[in-house]
Length: 65
View 1 (cartoon, rainbow, N blue to C red):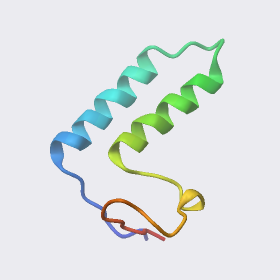
View 2 (cartoon, rainbow, N blue to C red; view 1 turned 90 degrees about the vertical axis):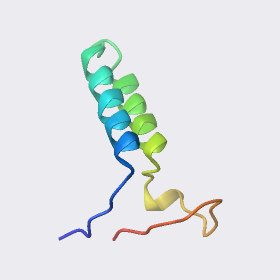
View 3 (cartoon, one colour; view 1 turned 180 degrees about the vertical axis):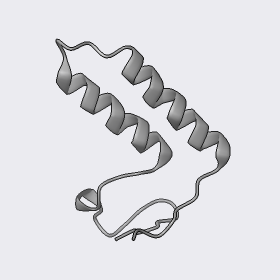
């Protein structure tokens, strides 16, 4: 089971709104754009894949394994 990670409610709801907007405006002719826009929405919330972490960060880092 993954540990819980909590975000500020406004940031969380903004991310939900962004992902919802991505889904509503999805263009089947541009499937790669869907993935990119979802990644951007998660990045705005500060969620990044571990593979891009270089050992340094400007802010607080939570590593969830």
